[in-house]
Image 1: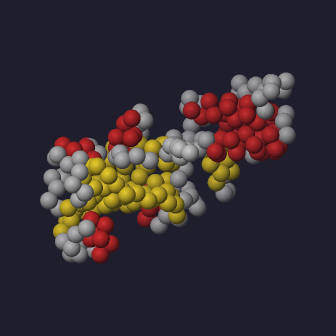
Image 2: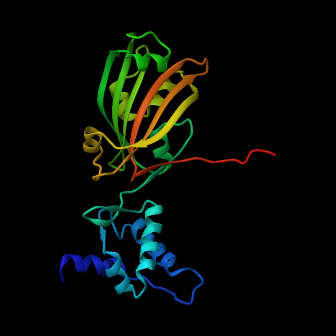
Length: 255
């Protein structure tokens, strides 16, 4: 038995379809494959057979398999990659849209966050940075660039600018989240303006985040203010779209 056949047996082993069930067959298949992915039986990088092969092996129509795979894609459990087909995706991080730090959100999600500080320097504020922080152009500011990991998987490339007077060190940034460091210094983030988007990554971002060909990135820019309304941080972050998403609660307006 060759390698591809071994993967097929492992993929389909234990999958049972109850044709008389009111639950659609595609959903039954998707749920059982999802369980195999989440419990580690199908680790990240595992390649699923194509729709025709899976439909023949399970005795269902091709459209049933297509709908099952679409369900897994919607759950961010698999990705479709040109030249590779359908592949089990790395663990996905869902982050609430709230005034919190990524480091703290990863801890709450049961992930193991770690940080590699790529840049820690004092620079002259460029026009955009000065405008965001409400300071004079050319004023000295901290420029930070960090690569954040979740369970040793790169999850974010973060660039931040802060007033140079703040008590920040490279050592602290490698061990804690930025907002934790600020709170310990008596600086409480009270409000922020934030913008979320998506785009194609730069070659540098693609390389450092280990992105698949044609994989997009999610973007987030934020200006955070303390209780006095003074800007204390301007951040611009990039996240792999296949491993990360933003979540928010929506409320119906009162009538």
